[in-house]
Amino acid sequence: MTGALSADGLAIRTGEPGTRPRVLFVSHTGTMSGAELVLRDAVRPWTGSTAFLFEDGALADVLRGAGLTIRLARRGSGLSGLRRDASVLRALPKLGRLAGLALEIARAARACDVVYANSQKAFLLAAIPARLVGRPILWHLHDILDGAHFGRAQRIVQARLANLCAARVVVPSRAAADAFIKVGGSASRVSVVPNGLDLDLDPRSPAALRAELGLPAGPLIGVFSRLAPWKGQDVVIEALARIPDLRGIVVGTALFGEDAYAARLRTLAAELGVADRVLFLGQRSDVPRLMQAVDAVVHPSVDPEPFGRTLVEAMLAGVPVIATDAGASAEILDGGAAGTLVPPRRPDRLAAALAAVLADPDAFAERTRLARDRARTRYGAAGMQQALATLILETVARA
Ligand code: UDP
Image (cartoon, rainbow, N blue to C red; front, side, top):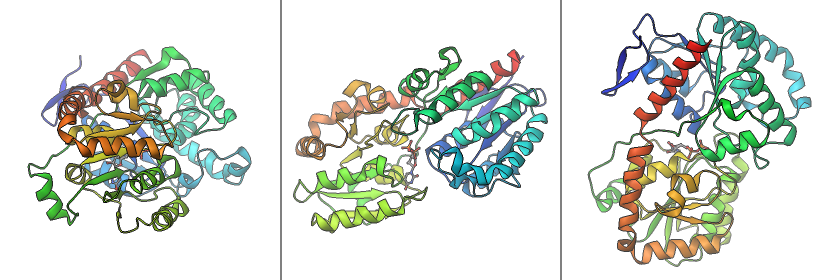
């Protein structure tokens, strides 16, 4: 019944054009953070489908480029600014707009066979409209539903809504699945589909890349993530201050209003006397190249990560990885066999791990090779696309 559609030279089974289900991809934000990068890759086999977006922006451009029809919500703009842990009281003034948006989603869903809600707010808004018009809905949950990220009431509401409405809940790791189930989410609905990504690696040596990128010689580490308190860039700066002559690049910007934290990082570097050793490079579109140019990548999140794309990117780039042991890091790094795990919020332990990697890189070569093989075999984009396509087709068949 299903035919093969080529995506990046790999056969992704989504059905013959014309008989393929019509998917409505729903996203609440136009900004590209990890969840939107996953969506960008997930839609590749679904040319001709529709994306319903709450707001215009980079994501709309990317999805348009992937051959999707874009429907922009008339009442969605600005709703992505509503904090995901906002109380009902804060959401109240926006209730009229939220209701209007739900109606728009219901209309769009009726024209499709299945709804695919990317991330939390998209699911909260699309779940009931999709069910009301009789369309099954998949929730791609990119968050870890634990106390570090959400209030208790919020976690319970999300899990109950999923049990009530979602045909399937897709999560990127066992850690995210466990958190969902712990708060009452139905285990039989959960499928773990790790984020999958491919990188264009640069054949040049780290030294050549550094010269081109204008990066300094000598010991250099990197941290690659949007700037947010729970991403832990401050811990890296504190660790760096403990190692003389070590420099670090901080890549990323405050994507969701965490500008005060971004400013605090600069103040912290100055206070610790390392302002000249910490280079803030802002948001970049050449993360893989930058990773290839450094001696080690640090993934310092202080709260559990649902996945952590940058971990896999560093593994693919063939650079030693040091990550905090919170959330999915241990799963991705094979319990520490594919990278070093340190406790969160411990600059002393991070500094010790960094010093070990920098002192004897050869001792870590085998581990780095293992990490690259692991990332290639487990976390490729085609594998993710295939797994998601299978779940979408199964959901439509059951409905
Ligand atoms: N990223 C980027 N440019 C930057 C900083 C980050 O392209 O300046 C990318 C990074 O390479 C990764 C993604 O943003 O692919 C972040 O995903 P992750 O899962 O690590 O974190 P999230 O933002 O989803 O919490």
